[in-house]
Length: 400
Image (cartoon, rainbow, N blue to C red; front, side, top):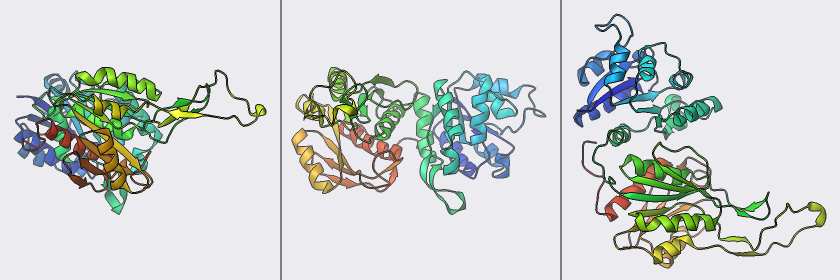
């Protein structure tokens, strides 16, 4: 039976950790809870002791064991902190050990998953993001929060991930059976840059957040993931990253890996045109406005559709500003792919450079599904559910 230490910090989302505890126990996981002093202001240790596999711990001192953090850290197969507050993330990143939870985090060699939850302003603060970058660099897994209703009636990014999503991630890290286990998924992300000269380029506003979310979620569902990207955003540990810049570089990287993939998801915003011959030196303003002649770039999605192997799934993305369904349907037919994910990038809450999205999913079988506004990770899971189904699997059923 896998052993999980469940750390609970002091935040309004602490009540959701009760459901995480219950779902993990139902899934056959031995759960050892640790509550911080602040957590006990929101939820009692008795609740966790009643639901978990052993009594909840709250202190380094006064318990039946002289060094509880060492036992907990050494015996754990995984340590999960949900919710993880800004305070906890800062202490963990700095190596500060001043209570049972932080001592256990420093005393374990098991994988660690932190599930942040806080107000939007705190989540977006540079200090919090730098601490998360530090933790990711050290191999800590981070399950980003969702967007939605927060304490005090506010709404925005920072809401703790839903308990089933946390449990799904935990089981994935523990090596459980998942619908994409044994599958190889190639994902592309962000916008390509087509050079005009060594300084300037033709590009677009794609940040890569959607593609990176797809890569993270696919790995949590058991897949081996190859991410071909032009962005430098951090991703979950274990994802193979292939850094590219131009459409041609992305084409070369994808086409050499596509034959070995069960699915290819083209979430990147590939430039349709590039300058015909980039200048070797920076163009000087004093020489006047240059004539820049454009030529088409290689059509990666069309090439994938034409070369698609039996049983392979190819997913395209359509970034539109008008006639969303009509344009997406035309692209689906022209590219010969299995699924087209279309979104209106002119929408302020569902376009480029934001954490939320809404989309139309058009299938080659004629199906059309509309998603509501949700986090990009939530949409990624929705898309991967369709991919799993097309591959003959399912995300339904199971313990969660």
